[in-house]
Length: 283
Length: 313
Image (cartoon, rainbow over the protein chains, first blue to last red):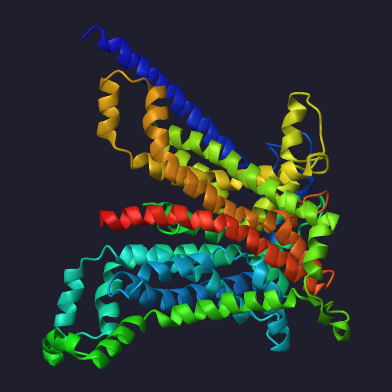
């Protein structure tokens, strides 16, 4: 007894030290975001000072400016475009990925692992590899600056991830449940909608969130293929790239507002996020 | 709709092997749910790449469409001999290796810290994930204007208090500036993967080693690291795939200037600004070849992880 007590105390002391270190690192990583949030509530003159003004008066001017009060471009069309592109492509992804995942996990096609790897391999084809032909096609077809072209491209970007994630979720459904439905004479659409979907709903939700995040974040396609009408939120943000000093609070407000949906979706799906990004390989 | 009306469906199943046409029909019925996704992917990703490949053999500037002609491998030769383009290949390698290694090491340290119990662990985890969830362009803007700016950026603001120098971060160390912002964004991702790895360790084995008198360091080197190998590889490979393709940070922080243009940015520039369709396509094809090298390795790692899972099931 007398020998274990000091040892335990030592271990606990070390544990507290490491806990403190974790806290410090966590705060260090979060500091830029916290600073961005504070700056977004400062006036432009208070935002652009050295040394930084910690105690300056708070104001919503940055946000007012961002939403176009000062005569600048309104971000609403861009935010609406991003919402349409992200939501529509996420729905399309789910519509295509769900039956595919069924064919790869429950009622399996032959060589299903090869098919699965085909999907994964498309993820490794860099976006720039097809950008030019897509641009030329869009130009000839009159689809430049059209949000629905982005919907199609974002769907192809996220479909492999969705198929992989859903495949791993569906593979966990007990076969007996599906067999029972089939013996009862249910056809495939019924089985999918009434049996498989309800069981795998949490997995489907996580997949949807991840697809939404990726679509919302995408810049390269949106930058090249959209212009005035179909501009998305990240493209809107690129308008701030060269703005110097004068608009710091506005830049911070804009960055935060546009990141907000992703932050919310990401915090909601923390664990599934890893699984989705590592394409179902890590659980 | 009511499921019970067509009950006899299960009965004729047993006689199937004797009738090949119905077997073929059933095979198609099995394949059918897969086809929409498969066809969609082939049309939207593979066809454009084939087109890129074809265009890469043409001398084609879209400002002079009439001068378009077949030029064989000239574009590839030009891409590989142009000093700017060669430099962008080197930049891509440097950027990817530096960011992946740094974020992996930092992510490992953070994952080891978060694997222990301490007060507020959930809050720290949430704080750490946040950088990964900021929209990439917004994160790049944050670093460019709010942190790096020499006059009012946070870094120099903090340095002011300790009387330190006031460097112009982006112009004095441009590539490092881009890399630091990417390490900040990607460390949380590495941490999450490695944390998942740490939490899947066999705790009885570790207890047994501890009872046998193994030190923390010995346990880390002989048990934890070998177990984490797969997860480290996975993090490195997925990180590489995303960072090789990075466009947002380079575009936003330096606009490809000061020697930071990587291949994706160069491809973007050569067709979006220089309108050199043939050259851009050749560069694009080279990016793909580079990615295939990484990807072959990546697929092997992922497939070994995957097989492990299948055999477990």
